[in-house]
Image (cartoon, rainbow, N blue to C red):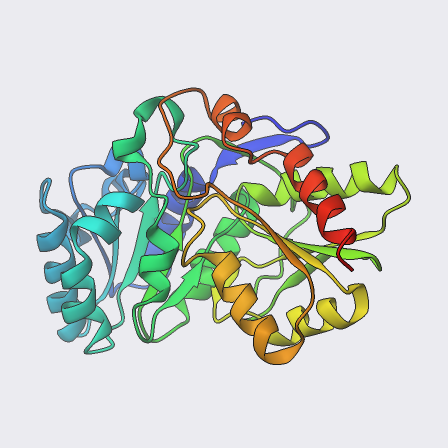
Length: 317
């Protein structure tokens, strides 16, 4: 997906597959379990390199999660992948009972997150996955923005002894971190200084938030941009500082309005520093089928929409 002002890089799902293959050469206990979607989730890159450590359970996400839980209980380090909506919605009970409750070391990757799967249609779009994943006790939840950050997120997840959910996207992604990314769980990345308002976001919306900040700058508005790729744990200190120093926030996400990043940020600010907050998200609806850029425009998820919401919030300061 192209965003003006950015070089287009590989899809985050592609970067996930490459990073997983790298990890496979470093850790003989790492195994991969897939639900017959290796070509789409890109776990096939690992499978080709390490066929003896790759397992395909077929189109059965509940079984996918159960098998991974068993492997983790035996001391292996399983990574599982499917479309975000299939993994979190189809297999939620198994995620809760087989991974979260025993707090097993399973890494879960949901690809095709958000509405940017585009032409695949609404049945393939994971738009409630962050709400579902963050509700699982003990889970870390990460949403990388580009190929470079995805590699950093995958490697950071591998160092965590416990369950992790990572959301990846289907289309190519604009390169926000062309020179590298210092991703750390629980830490926000401040990509742009600002004194008037903060734009907090992650994933595909990050490049759009940066573009919105450039638009606002032309109007004399100084917008800080925070990358909250670590959704859980979220960087509460960075959010409090943003609220105190800029006095207002806009949270942008490729997700339904309930239970996602906006809900998490609002909860933090309600406890630590209440300020006016605006939200840019999908609302309470599923998307149609269409080209990714057209869908983002149709459902109000563009740089222009983020800038417009910022202007709105600034009037409430």
